[in-house]
Length: 611
Picture 1 (cartoon, rainbow, N blue to C red):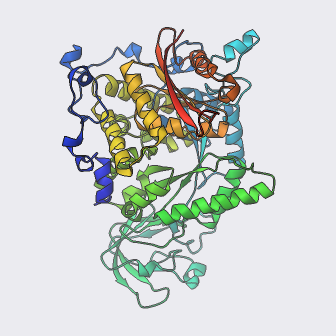
Picture 2 (cartoon, rainbow, N blue to C red; picture 1 turned 60 degrees about the vertical axis):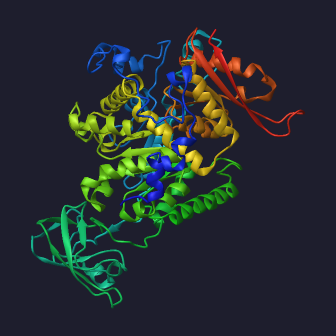
């Protein structure tokens, strides 16, 4: 219902893409591991084989804690694979709090441009750059530098990413008549008649309980009797009874399904209606260009309805880059912000395939989506979208009310813990916090709690129930076959993940200039970290959304002069970083430049034991 048959086929790893008979049979030792082509659920090991207790519950004392998260002197670091996107706001923007949020596991800072002022954005960006993190390495000469080189650099910037979330082309009611303070409301009673108008006259006179201005001139063209209109996130529900479809700026007459108060400039949702709203409002255009001057890494595009909308935003970003370059505010060849499309309407679900194809990632924005479609369908839509993103090898964020109760309470509800856990089981690359960290009472504790939930879920899927992660991998493999992807990156990525599992490696180390190779490796869903060394901080930050990738900004490894020394140097840095220890196995993957013997670039993979 929500996604097309083609997407559902890929999302579920449909056998029709590759008949079972065409898959190689397993025999002997090969059958003892789970190959890429094997059905995931059938390959899941039994509990009895591992002699585990009924529920495989670890000792609580072995679980990560806030103090251990802050312990940068710990020689071994076991970061979570799935990432946390946290919205920074009034209660979390100051440096001491933001530093603790970074240390507790926030990988991407979300800036909500629906509310943030320029001054607030400047403060939050500045404090994020000041926050220390395990993402820059250097060789220390002094004792102080040696301590810093374990990961928390005092001189080099951390590479936490920044996501600019646009307001989007929203529909809103007009200002209420006589509302001089901006805080007045009017009462709408159940059964009362409410006329929705789009004329300038009603806008200028102000809205009343019986006559509301809506800022969309084509409202009467997209509604028919029987449809619903939701005001203020569904606080008031109206049923359409009559539409003046044959008039310009025709009125829409409704009956209120329930009683409630309405304020000025309340949001309006039209469940099931197809609108022709632009991809960006004028405010969005201003915000995007401003964000590019601040070097944001991602743009979360609100209320995207089609692939054309994504293309329009990308075109605008290119235009801004040229203008800023002419003004000396943008470097030639600098990567543009990546576009994360927010799926929050029926139209977006109907055009999901093309939106996914055009986007760099997807956000499952469950807030508005839960108003646009029947709320009981939101979880189903989430699972289908996450699965489709897994098949495409693109990152997906699950957002909205994940730990909502922690805005006021120090502990989450059991249902919220289950929500985050199931998002990890579904295959989400990231889970997101909104008001919990932006304006909640416990911004640090909520990030800590979410990280602990992620750690527990990932430990369980790795040791006790590998089915969900193997299913996500299988979806990507089928997607590769469907796209007929036979690239060098795809081949070496598959080989690297296979080798890492065969060798029980602790990490996959990747040397990358543009980021495509670690993205491909991450898409195969390894259960170990992918440590990506990048010469560009921008490239490093734009790898943050992908599950399992832990980027490190360092330049000397990419230098061609190092030659064969690069893998050894990479392992040395990985050990210094705390990701691997002496005696552990690692896989090192590099992209080599063309030489006299070879006319094209090539990729190589090496297996090693940490000295």
